Amino acid sequence: MFNRTTVYILIAAVAAALGLWAAQHFFAPSAGSSLPQTRAVRLFEPARTLPAFTLRQSDGTPLVPGELKGHWTLVFLGFTHCPDVCPTTLAEMAKAQKQWAALPETTRPRVLFVSVDPERDTPDRIGEYAHAFHRDTIAATADIPALEQFAKSLSMVFAKVPAPEGVRADQYSVDHSASMAVLDPQGHMAGIVQPPFDPAAIAADMTALTQASFAAVSPKRE
Image 1: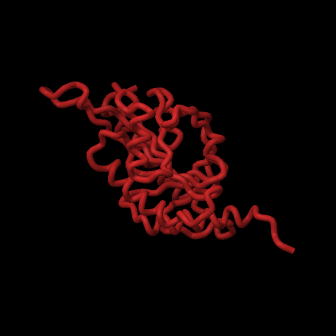
Image 2: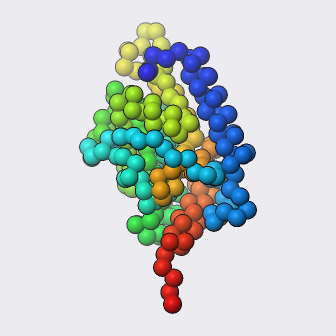
């Protein structure tokens, strides 16, 4: 919950970082992998199956694992009152989205912004916020227990930071992981992208991954 101690959050963050380090070093794509080499995206092998989750999209409809299948997806945790990291990240991703816009809509990579501040971030608010950066960005949120479970499955963390003394209680902040999770077209966690973000490199990687994935399943011409 939001009232977990700072020590607990730090321990969780270290554990998540160690888990990602192990995945990067011991589960790196093998020489025989059908996936291309990437610069910005750090791929895991094998990809990790995510536990069931239910988020709520900005239009009020549920976002469940099946909704994320069929596309490579970048997942970013944040909140609309974020002063720097969130707007900067979404602005950088908007640049990447413009670069892969020529790909077919049915397979085009997607960006999913998940607000971890449901107390202030209503579905309408997160939709307006995310779409101000790029109209194709998916925005979702959930209650705290569901968000905690989802974040944990991605080896990410977040925690509410109370407002300073003398400041209104609703002026709190939220600390959260700054990296992005990479989901493959089966909805599995296949890698991460860590800051600082390079939109051109991310766009090139996501385009190459998309083309490789769907070339492998496209019917061959006689």
